[in-house]
Length: 186
Image (cartoon, rainbow, N blue to C red; front, top):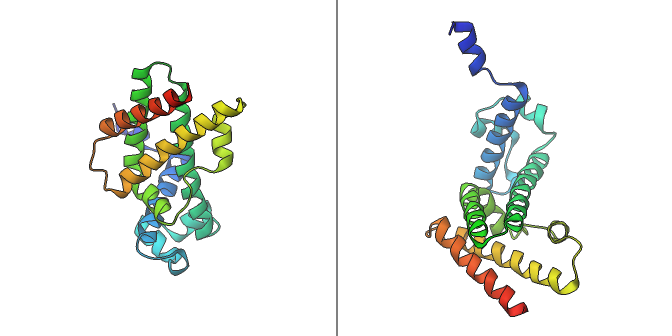
């Protein structure tokens, strides 16, 4: 392989480079938010912590509030996707595998989730829960709401407790609790 081919392999597309830049800024904002409130954080502090330029910030966001909304939207999208994957699983072993993925992802994003939990932000809105549940009869909708609430309450407590238990143990615990909720419906 010649030098030009090697360089092209290492070159990122604009979209990939912009995503990395945005991810760095989101991580920097969350880190700073764990130290002080948003009004006390400057754009300069964000770009310095992220290792990006000020123009890079304004190419991606109009304000630090816009960046914060992106952080919240990213976390909520991840959580919504995790629940949808879990619901799509059909066998108990698939559900356990999906729940383990959910706890693994929550662990990877625990700084962002922890910050949202600390400020009392709901991890999923009522609209997101409704979109996950779909058009169901009333009893089924309430049962699914209870299951989703149980999952997020357990994730919240696990993160606040410092993630001492492995994701696999938490997934097993969660699946058992959900099975109990479903048995109670019968």
